[in-house]
Amino acid sequence: MSAAATDATTRGATAAGGGAVAPGRTVPRVLAVAGSDPSGGAGIQADLKSIAAADGYGMTAVTALTAQNTRGVRGVHVPPPAFLVDQLAAVTDDVTIDAVKIGMLGSRDVVAVVADWLDSLPRGATRVRPAVVLDPVMVATSGDRLLDAGGERAVTDLLGRADVVTPNLPELAVLLGEEVAGDWPAALAQARRLARRHDVLVVAKGGHLDGDVAPDALVGPDGVLAQVDAPRVVTTSTHGTGCSLSSGLATRYARRGDWETALRETKAWLTSAIRAGAALAVGEGNGPVDHLADARRRTPDEGPRAAGGVARMLAGAHEGVGGAELVAQWWADAAGVRAQIDALPFVRALGDGTLAAEHFRYYLEQDALYLREYARALARASELAPSRAEQAFWAGGAHGALVTELDLHTTWLGGEPRDVAVSPTTGAYLDHLRAAGRDYPTLVAAVLPCYWIYQDVGERLAARQHDAHPYGAWLATYGDEAFAAATREAVAILERVAGAAGAEQRHRMAAAFARACRHEVAFFDQAHAWGPPGG
Ligand SMILES: Nc1ncnc2c1ncn2[C@@H]1O[C@H](COP(=O)(O)OP(=O)(O)O)[C@@H](O)[C@H]1O
Ligand SMILES: Cc1ncc(COP(=O)(O)OP(=O)(O)O)c(N)n1
Image (cartoon, rainbow, N blue to C red; front, side, top):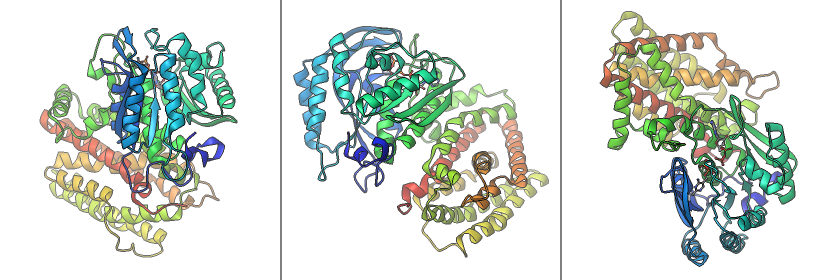
């Protein structure tokens, strides 16, 4: 068990004092101890991409080499365990490791090396012990064995050395010596039995079940701590989902210091990566997920050539498609972003009323800075608008931001906002809006997510309001029908403009819209990322 988890309640659903990363660091250093998949969808290749997608620094100690592709495993080679000892020592001697993900181990001897190494990791105050996520890989989806029979028994010895274990349903059954769970309640009951037996947190995964929902749950010895549902994606691109989940979880935990938050964020990201997997067109069997789909969407106009190529291809494919259909597609593409926002500690705490007053103040002060400039972006849209109706609409929006919205902030802040510095997050969002102001279609696409996502997230938050809620009056404003009507009108304008745009212009609009969506996530997260420590 890591030092971070030892401090926590119920064996570490939340670590005391924030993330496991050393103070002042924001990029967790994460080591994957796992096997290699040359086709890039699972194993250490998936781990490195997943860690990168979670904004971590990835490292690997290779336990085994496989010859596999999306259709199955052709061979497994386990190098001498002594060389794994050397790899682990080389990294440990030099680098402070914030989190470890353990995946395919291959043989009993390798399991023993990893057990000894975990036992040798620092305990105590001088160097923080890394968080340990164990994905007890036994059999690939293709049915091929990735751990020998002796290793299957030995891997149980690792359970007590991990903070979190992420077995799929067949692995859960093997670890307990029981039948594979046939439904979700049975899976949860088994996860709880495993958690109890080894005093460890278990992530129960519903990937192997049927139904519209793919549920996961964080389960402790006393039962379910949090359930995280996502729509089940109808796809064959699920190669490496278990590897990707566990390394993403380790990385996000290292940053957040809270397993539930880490699981919620990882699940939201993974669902979106699974959805995007088919478009990669890799292999003819079960293809990989697209770990970096969000990053690809985020940088299509300035990113690497390949990313631009994908975006241009998508924009080309949209030629002949109507504006409403195109905008519906952009909104569907933003589903992952919206789920990410719902999962943010700030949004969850605002919803349940536990948000620290200093985090709320930080958010309001940055939002006040943002609104002044957002009003300028809307005024610019008004200036560029081709019709009187659209000119009036954007001018009205600018007025609403400056008067209605800012008055509300002044009331909550107990006076005019203080003269605080623009945070990097707010600054980046405003830079994007200013850059988009060169032409009307791009600007309309860039300003839209602020309306739409705010209204969408707000709808769910408004439903949490009750009389005794400390932020009840604030939540009530999210239910404002006038704002909902303005959002509908803004979306209708976007649809009209997208409908009239050519392929290149559509590409720029899609990029501006997707980028603004990403800025929305960061904006809702910034009080926790940059703000004062919350209570
Ligand atoms: N078709 C799917 N749609 C959405 N999520 C899925 C799908 N298949 C798997 N997942 C998710 O991927 C992760 C890995 O799940 P699972 O397939 O159960 O494990 P493994 O890859 O280890 O066999 C879990 O978060 C699970 O909910
Ligand atoms: C080298 C290697 N490690 C692990 C796996 C298993 O990957 P996982 O994500 O658990 O699931 P599938 O890819 O089997 O769906 C692997 N195949 N290769």
